[in-house]
Each structure stands twice: as C-alpha cells, then as structure tokens.
Length: 203
Image (cartoon, rainbow, N blue to C red; front, side):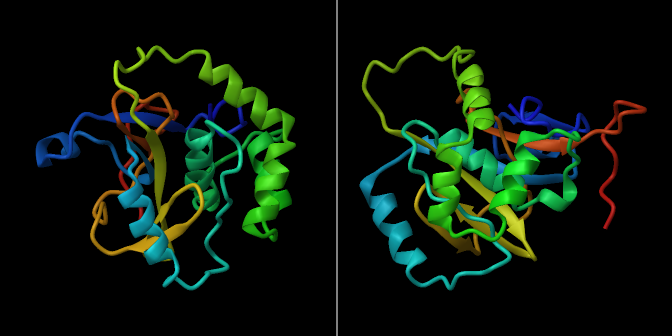
C-alpha cells in the first residue's frame, strides 16, 4: 500500500507476533507509528468520545474523519504517515505526499471530503483490498483499525471520528502496520538500503 502511494523503499512493514518483552525485542528500530486491529465495541466508542471531548485540538496533529465505509485501515495508515511526514521519504510523483500537502491546512471534515474524491488513493486501497487472504469469521465481529503516533513527544490514538492523547499504552515502542488483519499488529521500520540491515536509532 505504501509503495503504491509513493513512499520511499527505505520503510518496511514488520509484523509483531506478541507484546511480551522477547517478542518486542525482535522488532527492528526505529519505528514511527503503529496500527492495531481489534474488535470494536460500543463501550470503547463511548469511552473514546468522552476522552476526545476533553482533548484540545492541536494544530501539529494531523487528523481526518472516516466517512468512507470499510476504509479504517487506509485511514489509520494515513494518520500514521501524516503525523510522521518529516521522517518519510517520497517518490517525486507520490500520491500520498500530494494529498498530505494539499490537505495540510484543512479541517478534519474537509480532509475527509478531499479523500473521498482522491482517485489515486482509492485505487491503491482497492488493489490492496482484493489481495487479502483472511477467511470470514463464523460469527460477525466488528473489527476496526486504529493508529498510534508520537507527535512532539505525546502519544496519540487516532480513530475514525476522534483522536485522543494516551499516557499509558505503547509509550515505549511506536510502530505501524499494513491493513491485512493477520497478525493483528505490525511495525514499520527504517532499513538501510545499502546493507539491508536495520539502522540504529539516531536521536
């Protein structure tokens, strides 16, 4: 998906098979965002809305609302990429960079409208969607993707209608994922193209 949107080849998706110390230690660094797929409940939605009402808008945080059905994976990917734009490299004709530049100063609602009319991102979304290999669940479960990103030292959770600051989850590791829901969590790491080995994090 990221390649189709014109993100440089130095960024790679890495699956996270668990959240125990040994499993997390196998995740290459640095990582810049995380996408998580989980069963969505009304309780979670209500709790997040209550939190969002208490969060003041931050102009440095990029957020757009989800208005397109079955697009939560792409929306989460956009949130992770947009809030780490300065870290990414883009192709000269990158559809993602063009979208982020065009919508940088828009409201969350206007960004959603712009996305709904963006042919390049829509085509990339549909191409990736048909490649999914997950079998349908016997019992219908409402799964949902959310993104986590670090903006100016503060961890934020990005949902389909709100974003909230977090003080307790994934503070020690920030990474991200593609939207095929198996396994549930993936990290994006930066790879040195010359050696194909993960580079150490430069602070």
